Length: 117
Image (tube, rainbow, N blue to C red; front, side, top):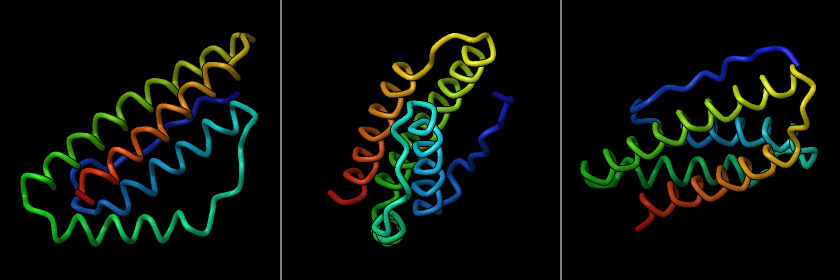
């Protein structure tokens, strides 16, 4: 495996873009776990709905979303870097990647809930 940098844009007020980026990270992690599936057509729809909900949300809700998205991006990036390092050393990564994917799915649902409440 080669080292990859996962770009994130924090607090850009583009909630749909942040969700789309996290979904791309999830796809990469699922690939490392051996459970990768092609992106669903509903992923773009979800990103658009979240973006709309974010735009109409109160500023306090927007800040909470931004903080949670940034926190998720930080630990997801650290997790991917750890997986890549382990893979480069020849260690198995599937189980750890599956666990990271599970946590990413959970965080994506929490982000959706923040702006949908």
